[in-house]
Amino acid sequence: MRLKEKVKKIIIIIFSIKKINKYKEYKHQKKIIYLLSPLHGNMGDQAIAYATLKFYQEQFSDYKIIEFDRDSIYSEYFAIKNCLNKDDIIVLHGGGNMGNLYMQEEKPRRFIINNFRDNKIISMTQTISFTNDEFGKKEKEKTQQIYNKNKKLILLAREDTSYNEMIKLFTVNVIKVPDIVFYLADTMDSDKNRTLITTCLRSDKESIWKNKKDKFKDRLQSEYNDVFIYDTVINRQVTFKSRIPELNTMWDNFKKSKVVVTDRLHGMIFCVITKTPCIALKSLDHKVVESYKWIKDLDYVELVDDLDYDKLKPIIERFKLKQVNEELGFKYKYYDKLAKTLKNYI
Image 1 (cartoon, rainbow, N blue to C red):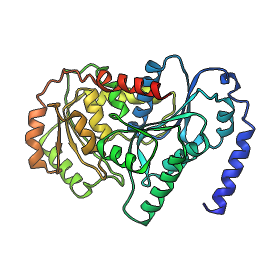
Image 2: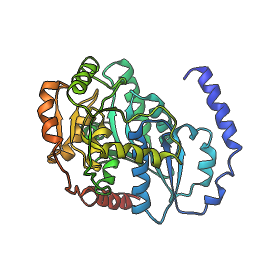
Image 3: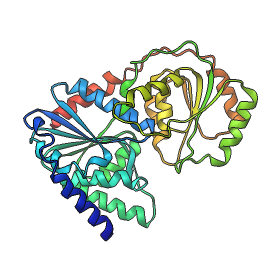
Image 4: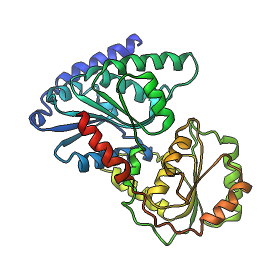
């Protein structure tokens, strides 16, 4: 770590000591401390936060839940540490950011795993991915060393590739379970008045369709009247208070869609929970392809290997007429069992 960063962190930690009594009212309560939740406009991450809170509120109803955003961990460190009891649980926000692609997420997660060793830590459903270069190898080794020192750490892997990588790298408990946003399946009604043909395609570093994306959208708009160009990222901060209204607005747009074409994992998952026909494409890593395995038997979600308009049009035509009413049953199949397993560990 560079000297400037070290000095900055020391200043932040000194400032956090002044907050040491901030949460003393929770000292004698049985609680879950939920750390690293997002304030940014990636609504997939916001849905993970919402589903995580819903899971623990329903499955661990005897615990008080206190949520902290990612950037507060250093400034609130001593205050959090001071209010913890040995039987309290720490829950870490999930996602697709375990690895070296998003170091702004990995570094604070390491900090928590390294500095909170007296409490059970549950890292929610994650995809793990390190680049195959010197930087990736170096960061993988750091992550491996820090995680393996914490014997109370539990990792949730959201697909096969991540599960296999985690059990290879780590000596801690690893559980395979679908992305936590699937916990919301069967909680929403399907809208019969659908009008839109929607694209929800990445424009960030995880996109692999940069050269084909605009061409596909142009063809789509030339042949269909109600094309909606959309994304699961909004350009504004999302607070704890605004999270649910923002998510409901997004899910309403999915419910208005006859079919969605997406390379976003949570674009695909939003389709599943809103009972919206979906054409899914892979992105930079394995998370879409691997997570599709959980839902491969659904007849309204199809994984394709190319963003080619002529190949996708027959699927669009077939899906735009489809009405979806089937129940997924993931809560019973996976999440009730997950809750039981976690309670046994705890």
